[in-house]
Image (cartoon, rainbow, N blue to C red; front, side, top):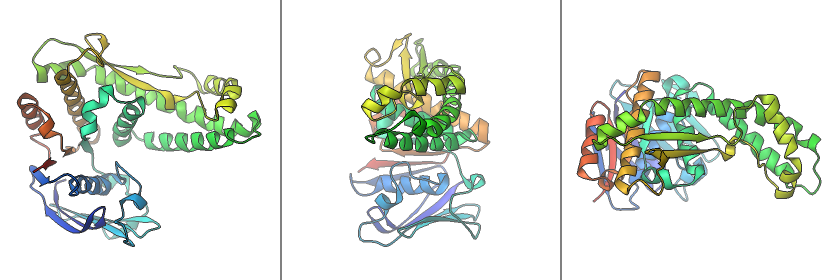
Length: 329
């Protein structure tokens, strides 16, 4: 599916905005703060059903009562996203939906400047990246993650009360155990699949013999639901004192290895950027293999951050995808 054009109303800083796209590559030029990233955010919202940056009330232009995104495709179809200050709706094929139907979602490889620092960033940032990766092609993962996070929030709120007992937490412990086990397995399977390809793709970019791999540092380990539940119960006193849940997959991390040692602190800046490029290329491959659709590629001000060799690798690898990129003038 190729995007033809986009029309924005009251989206971020854009009162009214329209842009036509090329079937291959479109470059959006502008100064910092001019709303370039907002265009990518609107595209992502219309093809994935949610923003990669914020919730609706933060997206709507200040002082406005609504926002509207209209995305038109070369095949004549269109998706319209509207937020009226209370609820968001999707208009697809003249039918309104509260959520974007799965069949109308389109895979996206999003490349943000912060991704170039993924190796040295926080565990939260790495979890978010790999969770977003999994959400696109693994059925049920987003549901498991959403239900886990809601249960975690409720449990943590109970732990902040002056008086709380293990019985008060039981139902939330059951949910955390059920979905935590599913999340851990999905993450472990993804890392195994990435490790089958990572070194080969990296060597294709860097043209050397270095080895790259990932370690999934699972906080819970490979446990059954019953054991997960027992460990949550065992942590009750510590959780009550700290006011939050200390055990669970929300503490997991992903560690990049470069020649069998942590890449953070050993790989050079250029080597780390080649690792992230390799990861993005694999992400596009896996999305195509799973969904049989060439992903849309959104590059947010990262092209200028790469040297000529890595720029060429980026162009070569995504030559069959529609690419929309932003750059500073």
